[in-house]
Image 1 (tube, one colour):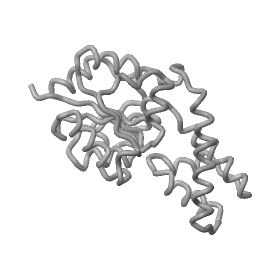
Image 2 (cartoon, rainbow, N blue to C red):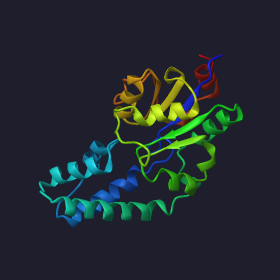
Image 3 (tube, rainbow, N blue to C red):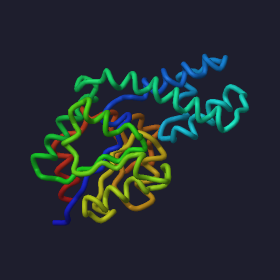
Image 4 (tube, rainbow, N blue to C red):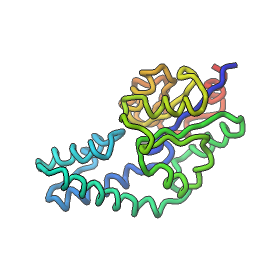
Length: 218
């Protein structure tokens, strides 16, 4: 049997920090004199912090120097960090812990693959830091999804071939990244948006041990 490896995105998959990002971006937008809606925030899913700021400024019709952008990126992140400092294991999304514990009990290698530079402190806050064999985050990658770099590094560090890697993602960019290197892609969220995934689930409460065994033994 080929060795399988499971790779999990963080935001929107293991924990829901999207709301914290939204509050921090909304605060910056208000400071700059315009409104920023939850619908507009959808454009930020799976996007780097730098690109997110550019989108925000485009929405507000604001031109800025690089120095201004650098200052705003720092202030946004500081506000976001103030939210995640309050996180606990109660912030783990429903069904996630059951899946992780099942895979752990079977000694299946697992990686965290996220663009977030705050992935490690978040995992420590919610008590999942030691669950993963390797953590690949925004401090380790140069290219944003849909480039598959974060996932290929994760698979390499787990010692599995790309075709034996199973990726859990909530963004279309992440699904496309996994698909581009023939990894098995599992969309967590709206199947209408994540229709390019090999499998779709609204959340982890829909994933059972039978399905996980099928992935492991495929």
